[in-house]
Amino acid sequence: MIILVAVTVIFVNSYFLPKKRSPDSYNFNSPELSSDETQLTFNNISSDEENKQQHKSKEKNKRLSVPEFGCEIEYKCRNNEIPYKAISGDGMDKYPIICFDNKLLIHKSLKDSKIGRGVNLVAIDGKTFDIKITETFDTYLEETFFLRNLKLNLNDGDIVIMASFDEMTHGLKEASVSLLENYGSQAIKALKFRDSFVMMGQKGLAKGKAIEMHTLKGQHDFAPAAHISGCAKFPLGVLSPLLFQPTDVKREGAIAIGSTLTNCGLPEQCKDNEFSVHVYTGKDNNDEPKICIDGKYVMAKGINDAGRGLNIVIVSNGKEIIRTGHFDTWQDDSTNLEIFLENLEDNVILIVATFDEASQNNKTSINNTSATILLLLLPLPLLLLLLLLLLQLPLPLPLPILSVSK
Image (cartoon, rainbow, N blue to C red; front, side, top):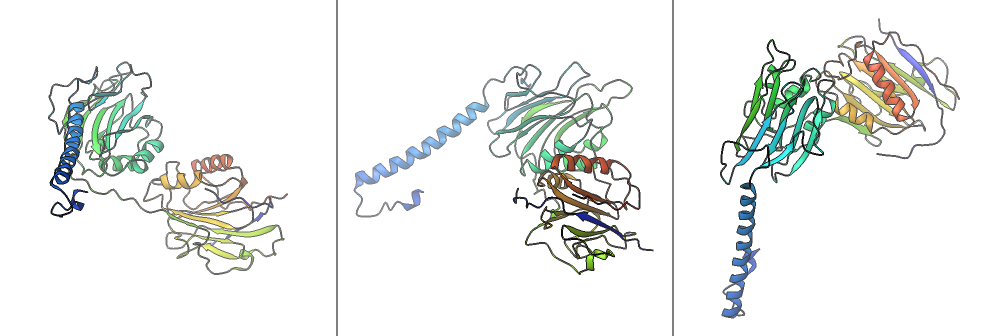
């Protein structure tokens, strides 16, 4: 038996939201050039090449400078190699150390150094070797910001150096583990509670090509420190572009409209300051999710990419459908969903229908796979808070009819 859930949302605010958020060019055989002029041209070219060589020499000399305190290693690196060193924490009293190119980047003695429980990370531009990120991510609690930085803030070939402190595994889910394998790690899947871990990899590096060390806690309270050091030549191996599933988000002008359903199935016509809404999750994975708004289906099979996971429609104060989104949180992590929610305008209506299975890779577990969520006109911070609360709790079925009046 198919159960349809029909709800009426009464239009609250009457205003509309503003829409957010070269030497080859020289002809040395030309009769117009005197021998002096020709010689001057050659001298200029030679001078340019000399300057380039001097610049390269300075760069090499820079890399051969004396290591900063704490960055000493046993090896003398060649001009085309870069020295590195990473040591994890050891218990609660010995803090991690990360050095790159003889520079001390993470150490307790540094004034602005960020050291803490979880993953202590330095990210480096893979072409210029400039430092892009120096940060600590408390992956004992959760992986959200760690995952987002690795996935969105770094380019293919960028270098990451990581060192654990205290405990880094509890909040790491499959999405982060798989992503680190795409930075070259092979040991990451074997990590257990309070094991120690250090790694240097690159985005797009084949699994097993990162430089890493993993030490086991065993029967002790903490694992002994893990450490790596040496001279690295980049890239560390063959790099492949790291591709992610595109986000199925559509905005005004690109939103498809499906079949019509008078008043979205409600027995009585809505008033002028109201619009009808009908939300249906589908009874099983052979069915389909449906969202009808103001008499038109905007989410259904073949319409705006509706499918497994979370199906979302955003409606403005003026009853305009301003955005739709489909997020397969069974297959992919919820990073794109979080970004989608963070960029919502204030005072919008958010209508969500889950379909099939939506919880496997959702960082905030959805325990009821056939639940329908409907949120009403709220300021954005409250809307996000309420969504998170709903996602963390089982939702009773059937849902009650929701309405708001002036």
